[in-house]
Length: 228
Image 1 (spheres, rainbow, N blue to C red):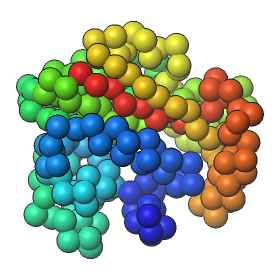
Image 2 (image 1 turned 180 degrees about the vertical axis):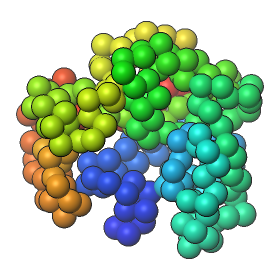
Image 3 (image 1 turned 90 degrees about the vertical axis):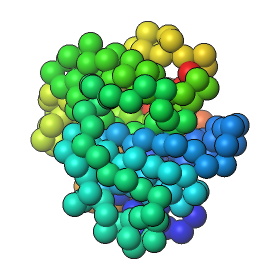
């Protein structure tokens, strides 16, 4: 995939986060239709909506406030606006029931559940479950709590690092207990430490070499698919 497209989809630490795409794409191959009804939550600039629309799927691009002012220019750039609608949706209160084949999001659970409001993570996942058609899928990537080193640097150098509620691996069985299947992989170790995208890209390439040696508990990215 073109590097500029990858950057437009993921924006930050693309060397590590973009590894979600082949994992998700393998799962999409089992989808019942070539033209899926999709929802992106917490879209910001609409990168994941762009990815799905480029595959020919219809996407509802949403965020806590209407994302159209932030996202429409990107979608116009790639000429996919005919496949995308914009709407304000609170992930804690999704009005659609059994509407979507696919729901996607990236790094929203920790912000929604700030200051250890773990029940809100559960509420988001339940809302998504209800919005999916039978057999529908969540494709998502989230920041993990990771190692003590990551926790220290987040508290010290990330403005929201103290109150962000990073996802923990031991939360997954409960969060996704209703789903018929759940698969995930963990990624990244050094990339998070880069102070700019050039540094993160360099460190991400080192992460590619280190990947077989890094235990899941020390990785800082979770990439997952849950099927209803």
